[in-house]
Length: 199
Image (tube, rainbow, N blue to C red; front, side, top):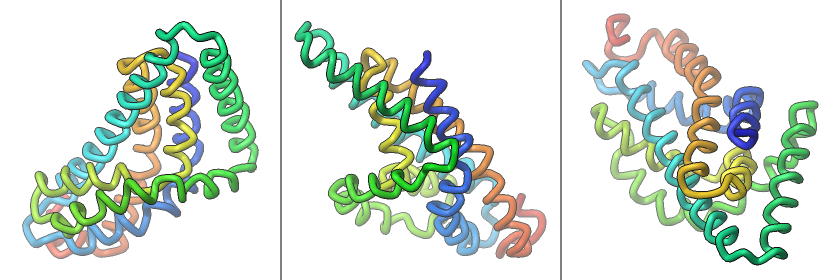
């Protein structure tokens, strides 16, 4: 869909924002990786977890948007269409270097993070692939302007399934840049406490 493509493009080309926002988090997870735990396994766990959280958020807002459409109230439908169109325009502007507005969106999620943060601290640093998955699930709710820019696209996608697809596309678009950060951190850190065989 158009919304999914826009979300994917936003995250793929917003690599500098991703690296700046989450590079420190990746560094902390990998540097404190326990001896004997594979760097690749850890990365697979936390990236899977955060993308899963994006998808869950897409299901939530997609459900809300679908319900508003189903209500068959023209004013609400027009508001949703305008919101989606404005977000597409904003994403287009961000790709031409006008991305500072993304940072202004980040305080919107502080309330959610206050609830999720204590849970995240229980699995930090992750000692296994399973704990890395849980850490990633929490990571997905860290306040992030790019995530909040993509969610309106999920809202107007048409329903929970469509919203999930939009946010999955967004998550997949973040992977190339985030995996590059993983590789850089591992190489700079000498492959971490487990040595060169950890990968």
